[in-house]
Image (cartoon, rainbow, N blue to C red; front, side, top):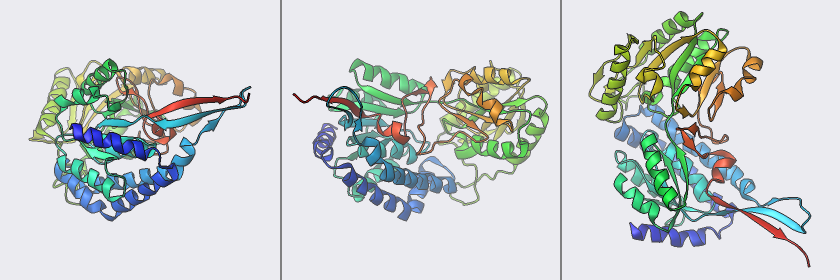
Length: 429
């Protein structure tokens, strides 16, 4: 472990001296390798965490878009910024911090890692990554990919340690900052440890996103997007739509159409191309979801579809008559469960949406875009998507507020999270 950190430190000293234009050449290699071997990597993802193979391929392909984005834009993002002052010369430079620790999750075992590592390394840092314990082969192969792409040895290193050892790594003086994507509990632990040592951290934690359907929405399109927003990756996503808030005038129609669409989803072997719903990544995750659904039903929620568990497989489930005190409303449900609540007014929908400890994103469906744009500031979220599901895009900053964490990934904001924003002032004597 110490040797890994020392290698990262040594490599970083030389890596930061390489021009950005030279660094990004490695991104082109990275992109080429990912595209060439995407089926192989996707099969590995599916084998380890049960994601349907077509979704796993899409995950790898998204990593290539990320590489291309920073290949095209990193140089301009990181170039010194001139500031007009009374001084002879004033500018801001963006310089790497050093060795950055990444603590990454299993639900998107390639995408989550690449969206942290690519901008962080491109800005001149090196990274060590503690990946999730249930995707060890993905963790190993990602390091191989970076090395094959001609990044200097030590730019990216896999750190095969247990969660209990993370605190010791954060405390090591070689580590200058940490990025975590994970649970609220993990975020508290990492932020506490980073705070003890005055080290910056970026936290991308859970989400309990509302999916709001207003009275004038295009119902057919809203339903189609809703299915993907809730059921993709068997619902195992922080940005998945979890609470469906539906205007009372269209509630029954939405529920009927959603049920019909979800019933058509095909489950089965995730390695089959026609499988749309796989099992959850672990049995304990399905057991936890079962408890949340069961308690909500005891409290008055109506089970419209699904609700059954078989080992790690949890049936796509729809619950109606959900109220804010129920677990499926107030807690994050990490699985294929849609919780539906009706509302009477837009202001009530906003209130229900904000009635959450999380603040990652919200989707609103309406034909009256001008009207809902005036309400955007009322949503306590990191992102607002109108007539679209919440999703990550390399071109847009990604992150949340409240218990969804802090800091941003992706876009220009993401590549500047782990840099020293250095003010330089020069006067002629």
